[in-house]
Image (cartoon, rainbow, N blue to C red):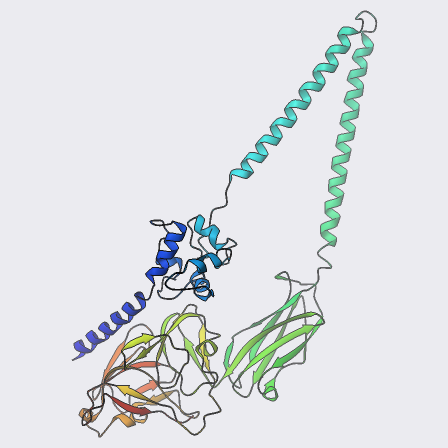
Length: 472
């Protein structure tokens, strides 16, 4: 039985990968290759527009897709429109990168700077100037004077005059002038200039962007000028906050800087987003942190997650705004297809690919829905689920509370679910079989997602069954 379950999981994984891999549009790639004549080159590749995790787009692919002229059947005009952009912020425009056969969506791949110009300039200038001047002057003057002037008359005078005068004059003048002037000017100017450098902005750096409500967050503030710390800044800045409930937020009204740095502590008794701003006359800077009802830690790589109830906000971009990631994937058991969700909903599981360490998801429960618990339909076969909880429930919850709607007695043969797959350790799946290691006392975690298998539903012609969660 276990082998069959594992084989089914592998088939689902392969199907998911196939859906992701086939999402690249070969017509757009053909338009790119034809328009720029790069067939057979290194940028005749899907990675010109996609990251290595297809179908996720790199910055060049994102600019192309977001251009108003973008058309999947003919992307030529959109390609032309974004030629002068620098999609990957590597200081080279997209068209310059394409002409150099480098990837315009990869900041670590860029054209090599030409070396011809620096070579030609230093060679021509030093050669012509020193050769012509010394040769013409000493040859004409010494030769004509001793020959045409009568040799008999003054032999000593022509010798003494050219020797003494030319030697004393060129030696004294060139030595004194270049030495004194360059030394005095550069020394005085660099010392005076850095002192009055004005502070242009404040940089606010929280020690973490997500914390449970009621727990403090420390924020370091740096005084900057052109991204450089100004250690001579020792003034006082005003602190202000923006939040839905400002009365619930504790923070200092001012902070004193020492050597260009200051530190403050902020806290909120309720779950909400808080924007903190530091100002001193025309100098300012701000940052946003979230105080949450629940905080779920994430590992780098793919994580199977869920949220315990209705969120506010629920949009993916808002819920995950402090999580560094490059994709979220959901699963529809009715169509058996993976897709990219726009909202995160309770009782559903989601795959998220985290791209950095020390990331966390802050969940803020909606206060608009207080009486209706979440619900959804479970379909025969595999379902990607999440754990629903109330505000007072523990993080770890028993199956007996969660799957009450799916059981019709103590006998496991009367349960509608037969197995569950967990990714609690993020990488290796663990399969639980109903009645053996999936029992009433088995614990499932808030914030985690799970695969749940629903068997054929008896005494009905439906292929799905309703499942309810818990009121927050």
